[in-house]
Image (cartoon, rainbow, N blue to C red):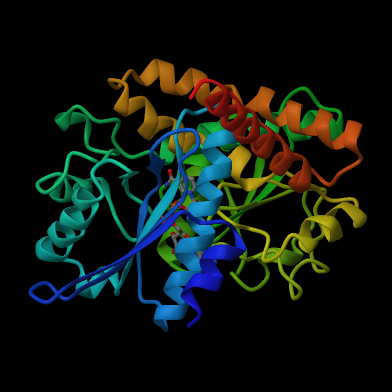
Length: 354
Ligand code: NAD
């Protein structure tokens, strides 16, 4: 595992490996960029098949958080934590406390929150060891599960995409395939159903798909068929890397718009989508609602403020479309440019006023 060359590739500032003999914690925290402020990003617990895979994931996710924060106009940088282990089997108070101690050692350079495999309740345990944690329950003065606000953000981003691609002002009658019915996907199914969308859903947990069928009249498709459904929109709300060499040619939709982080396996897949005339809503733009919710908590949680900002993802998506058209870039590259320009401008401003 070439650690320093991995860090150099995307200019990561710092990577911390944490180990605790008592709890068995094996964790990595990556700080990608702190130009805009301390690095914020969730902690993912996942049974990575190797330490190299865990490092690869934490580097990709922390970089994505820098871009998400920058594009959404948030005054924070990008970071991420991963814990190597199966959340169902290995998660316990000691592991979470040990992770909290590790976060605390960074003295505010990294602020953690929940992610795949960790929950609001887990963050309350992390809080025993550090104040540098957000995404706490409402009972503890936090903003609760960020999933619903993420889903609201996706809905408003999708409105801008539908307007652009289908020329429709409303989501009524738009057909959407949702991949993954977890904290974001299930709530997205609910709000899109309320807006009159026709839904197709897939989840590896069949009871979740059954629930969406009963509650939102969704049609169930198998996880393998999900890429080939003929519909207006494909909404990835499960895993990263799902737009790849195997899937990109299968898609029969006009729009890809969902919350999952790092949907494109590689940048080239954004270009392939554009060539295939499939509109791609950059994941770190449309999926910023969860980040907005946890950042709102740091400023004293006001649910209406978080919702208003998540609704603003409609305008953000419009801005990305403008840049994509004026610079003749795929939307993925246009969103990168939006984020990078903001970071560069703030960097120059800080240098001038140092
Ligand atoms: P989650 O773990 O609650 O839900 C993921 C769902 O996907 C689960 O129901 C799981 O069974 C299902 N799934 C896994 N593999 C699948 C497959 N191959 N096919 C179909 N379904 C599959 O996670 P979440 O919090 O809902 O987040 C979903 C995605 O969105 C993640 O990539 C996450 O990083 C990203 N995201 C989440 C938030 C948030 O606020 N929770 C915010 C921004 C981005």
